[in-house]
Length: 574
Image (cartoon, rainbow, N blue to C red):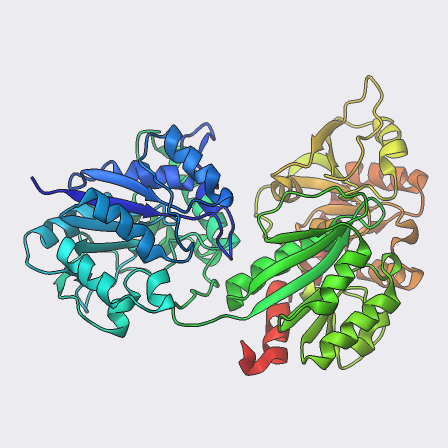
């Protein structure tokens, strides 16, 4: 009997999306989920030509959750003790132990591998005398994440996989020194109608895949698997779905990519905006430019925030700036509030970076450091001064995607990640005094204290909700403090009321914002109450604000504007 071994290769140390194999994807109409790698295993179990399945991962502590998952799912896994980058060695030790006749290597980040194609390819390979299979030159296909070898073919590949790159990337040794006899086959179906990424290597890829799985299980039974031909049809008819990760740049196996560092801070006084924006910029650099990014962060209170990005947490500001002084990455981005950082120490650090030829980009309110920066990107409609090194405007706002959905008669309250202005103490009382049947949702940020609610309050508190973007998209009226949440609300076409901003922005900026007429601006809670009552009773006022919101963001580019600036700054260095 022919023995065919499928090996799933997976490590949680991905430079672009750490922990991706255990990210959840929907598995039924009720919204229950399974990790990406579970969906891959389920799809392999449907293959008729595979006898044995094993997980190939490494024996470091970071990958222990994968090892635990394999044990829980009765999947064979003996963690590799060798070099963590030696993927070929990691697979070969399994193959030597299992002694299969044929091998299928499965990338652990592709939850749309097609069982029919795997059976089709293996059947053809088994019936031939060749070492591997490939699609005929005339065939275009969506398939990703699979490689097929006979035992003899695998041994040939191992023999020529001697360089670091060929040990790290399956099949790359044959590109450098072709030794494999390939059987060219037709596809098992027509997957040539669209070209699109179906691997999960970035946040955008994950958003795409999560949406694919969500749509499938809205109308399909839990026992089914997502059909790749259905995915192709969805991509053809829905440009919004297509665009989710169409911009992601595939990393080449033979190229060393640039690296970058982002420095930021967060806390009750500082807020969470600088950190969240750093995460967004990290994703953009990885997706558009394949630049590996490390975020260096300092928290006022020492409280860390969960993140899928590569984060180095520093004990204090001095430790953070000391690391900055010694950073060797060719690109450094800084996202600090200048009122909460030692500017002299920061200037000294930037001077050291300049001597090493490192490019330095500031984000947002860093005009005081302009002389020490190569570029200042202000994600705001308002720039305090005009300068050839400054980019600003409505086009620059940095938002993660906000879905398009029908508005609901509800009030959403956004007081920021830390409620730095303390609205949780007084605002609930004002909201409870409003004569309205509209439900009120209060978003409590991850660093914010709980709002002070009366026992009979009708306000519903959502503590750091994962679906915040959906809440913004669906809410007819939003009350927001000044900051990213305000402009996300405007961008989400809500009738938006700015709560008294106090010290968060200067008078000139408020005057400029008022001239845009895209939100209401209150100077006190008493005035905010009056404005909210107007919004609730006057649909024409809500419609006007929503129309103005569309106008101010009609030229919005978001992260693309920042990426274009970085490309120009780095030139051929990327």
